[in-house]
Image (cartoon, rainbow, N blue to C red):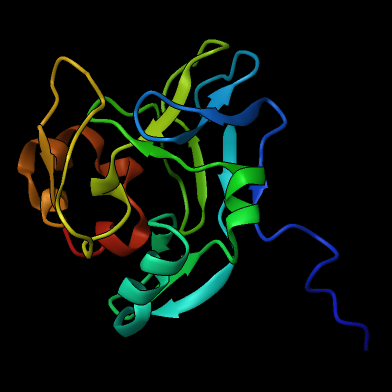
Length: 169
């Protein structure tokens, strides 16, 4: 049988969005046209990296990807994939969240030109803390792998957490 690895992309991004340079952090994903609440934005794919190797992956490639269990992450397979598909930056005022283990949707209507960003509290529990640069009025300033445990975030956004983290709540 033919190897189909390179036949289709490892991730899907709506044609209504595109990667661009971001003021939040290097690359981002932006709406090219209006996106309605509930519309699918992205389907994650790539390679599976065990938790014990994720720090090494992040040194080589990027912080991009999602945690799908206590033990595994799905991450982009290359720098080229990141440039082609973009990265969802963190925002303390997110407009993109999960509706399945690998699919993200618009949390509200999004206007053309807006950056599509998610709260990393929705995605994973295992990353090094970093200083937030989202600029939102409710910015938490420091983002940690334990932010998914913050009750206010859970109450406001629980339906948009990844199933992996939703099951932990």
